[in-house]
Amino acid sequence: MTSTLILLRHGESEWNAKNLFTGWVDVDLNAKGEAEAQRGGELLVEAGLLPDVVHTSLLKRAIRTAQIALMTAERHWVPTRRSWRLNERHYGALQGKDKKETLAEFGEEQFMVWRRSYDVPPPPIDRDDPYANFHDPRYASLPPDARPATECLKDVLLRALPYWYDAIVPDLQAGKVTLVAAHGNSLRAIVKHLDQIGDAEVVSLNIPTGIPLVYELDDDLRPTGPGRYLDPEAAAASIEAVKNQGKK
Ligand SMILES: O=C(O)[C@@H](CO)OP(=O)(O)O
Image (tube, rainbow, N blue to C red; front, side, top):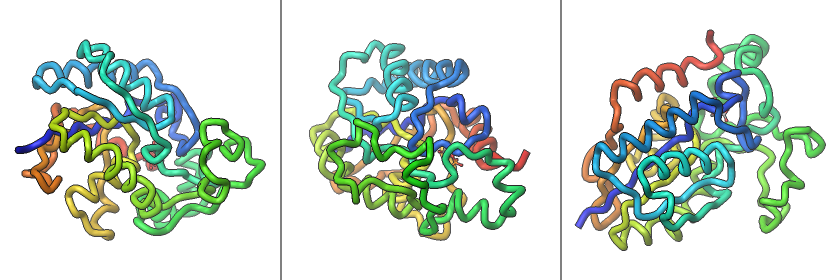
């Protein structure tokens, strides 16, 4: 038996459009992002892939993307679970900073290490930084020393995997079409795990906004083939735009 997993990065956010590092800052979708989420829902309908269950992060850009896509597919009623473990990577002291200015200040090599390396986190955010999340009630159940002040992709993978095994895998094993609405870097971590991408190779992996990425998984939860974007052309264009953020 195979099961179907659909990964969906949120649509364009207000800060994606402004080229700002976002991380755990709870920025909303802009109008383009809402339209992308709707298109994501239409693509699911066209492909005959109707989610039975949805998992999201605790951030509104992912929550609203899932809601809009599911409303479009008339699946707004499916059971929903949310976890901080699906949140975007915490971008540390870079949260709220302009990507172009950061590239100009620190140079392309450092900029790319912070953006895409597997195991080098950006500098930690100050507890008093306006974009820190230490007092945010949605993380109240997380012990203070488990609340990140910065994260690299490896940290994201390590905190996402318990949720993958404990919450998402049981849905897949029950044969449910499972939608995971999350973020560029939390989805990079899940795709790295699924496709067994090496630590050096994952640097070049970018996830487009708002386009469903579908995997069929076997009994061992291994992909039976490569993940497929439901709109490959739009995905390729969006991947290129994500890759070049900060450079233009
Ligand atoms: O700013 C962020 O949080 C992420 C995703 O938007 O950006 P990047 O693609 O640079 O990792």
